[in-house]
Image (tube, rainbow, N blue to C red; front, side, top):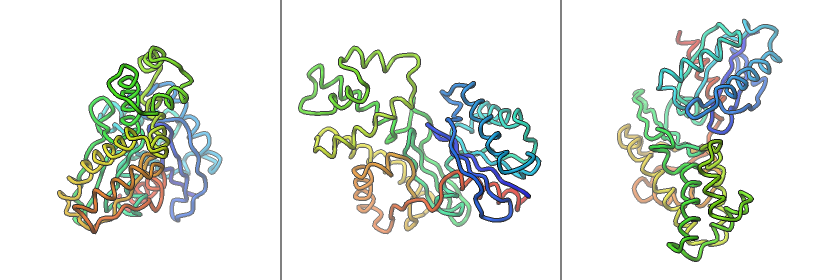
Length: 306
């Protein structure tokens, strides 16, 4: 029996799919902790990989039965990241064929059931990626929270915190966002919030987890939250436009992934309105399959082509 393991390393969790090597039958799906090396904890990542391979062994007697492991993860354009991920795989006893690629590729493959079309991801981070019929590719965004990730969950969380401090010192008025942030964090003062933000253990994931507050405030008609949702959609549109234009994918549906687009109707609807103004033939669609399954498909295609 032969198996393919597809791994989608997201910013807050890692999704894994184990499938037959020669059929589309899925044998096992599960999630473990994040494996994002940029800003991640090396020991926690090592533990995640150990869990991945321990649970994979539930499907097979020996790892030799795994004919391909495909990992889609952020930051792999950095050789240090790719080498680190490969070491984690090899340290767990797998010696077979291995593909390590950007998570945008596995997400696109799963979303469109082919390495063609456009995927827009807005989760903890943000990125857009497309491939046309000629095989030409273009990517926008995905350069990390310190210099990029506009329209992402992290960006929204950061902006919510900015609104809080501006409201508290008098630069902004009439918004319920501070109260919602205090409630979510279990804190009561600006000083406590600043302590949380700059604490050495606070990560971009912690900031991104504040993003649902924007949607909750939008539901209550908060003007600042509604403006933030529009700004988020505008930033995501800026990611999409160069991909459409460079690849001439004017009628290609755009698969949307990540919690910002899939869980906030205010951002999604604002993006749809903005797209309709310039690209009326372009529609937003939900992915056909997830990125972990996309990693399985990509791994299978590598086996066929090799």
